[in-house]
Length: 397
Image (cartoon, rainbow, N blue to C red):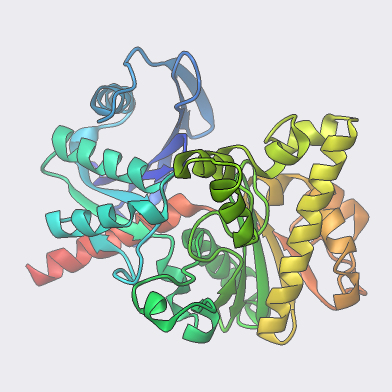
């Protein structure tokens, strides 16, 4: 008898990762991973089946409901795996607001609550909603579960979550939420297995990818983070600005006459590494460039990361461990070196060879702070949470 299967969807602003898991054991085991970049022409599905990569040119057009693209994608998965054994689908949903403190089965009520949060995550939330509705249309019998990036940060105190704004705005939901929670949840679990003495100490994790943030952890719980009310906040990212004086937004609206939609486009899609350099949003391309603008973009990136790590160390009252993760954090030694050079005053010292080789431990023996490079796996957390909700439903029915 074949094992039950589970799909996971991890959408970005312009792409989606699709994981396929066996759920015969207590912890789901990934057996396939697909990635679709909606910016590519033709539309390509990269399918990884146990290390064997297949690149498929999809024929479907991208529509608002994604029905055709998703149907064709599932058919390609079905050619390699028995999708008749699918029992559930897990979704990463960026924003859960104050409504969701953990994973939730997707019902009409749940989906309505997720939709209400679109203004707080306009790049990511609509993607999740489209995927959820597409699965409802294509496979209406499947249980669907939402895993929320904000839920992990619900352990932060109101002092940390407040802005210095009128109190009624906080009560209305204008507060710091924090993001990349699924990544940090995976990292703290990995730390607990590999470095148990460090896992429950004062840890700062840096999730550095196209979207980027830092999180302060103590006792394995989120205590502070660089991202706040929206995914614009914190350090500069590929195309997002990071922390910005609110007066700049007022200036763009009132003095330069930009519309709200134009300002949104500037802050989300024209800023960050792309905006500073005028060359590329990809830090690898900037590393390869000799142009001054590229050097400046990378220097500002490292400067802001180190500054945010220092602020988070203040929240924790110190730092025992610094973790780099996600695409840039895991694979770009020069970014890590530049960040750590600015954190030397906190006792951070790198082993040059270990850092150059993307080793697990990249600090040297004299460093007062253990510096690690840990791969993250948001899809695994989505799968784990989907199974936990599925099992809970089975127990209570």
